Amino acid sequence: MPIARRILPEFGLTFVRYFGDVTVKENLDCFLGYIDDPQFDPNFHVLVDQESCTLSEATYSEMRRLAYCLQPYYKARGRASRTALYGPTDVQFGISRLYESVSETYVDRDVGVFRTQEEALAYLGYDPEDQELFDTLWHSALQFKSGT
Image (cartoon, rainbow, N blue to C red; front, side, top):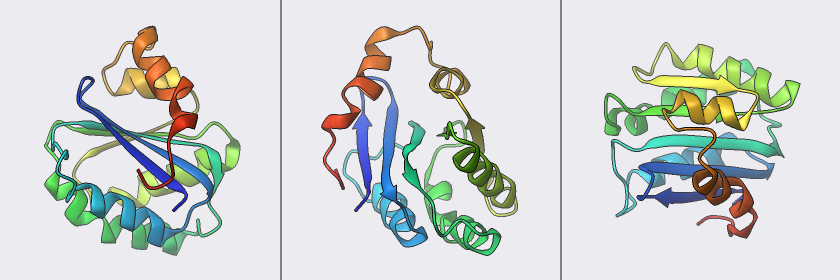
């Protein structure tokens, strides 16, 4: 699976990284599987890093289907938990904004879209200058194994 998930209890955060071409089914498997993970905490924020991916199924209808099918995932999460989608390229950012827009119909949780890592961290309430967190996320992210 071209999605790696890492739960970071020490930060109250779940970090999700996309690699290569990510499909709607893979998104569903990742996030619906997350709520069944023994480490799942409904109050953790979620940061999605799309820097290393393409999203070939990113049509309006597919983003709408994704948002609709992820309702159980969002309902399992705490009211104060937030999701930040980090997409630095125009395509990643645009597709993420499309998802953010269509998800408002189905999701009663905060979802934000950002072009920089620092903006995404700040949205989630973290200090973007926190070098330990930044290193944990982006400098060690390449050590992820797909599907973890």
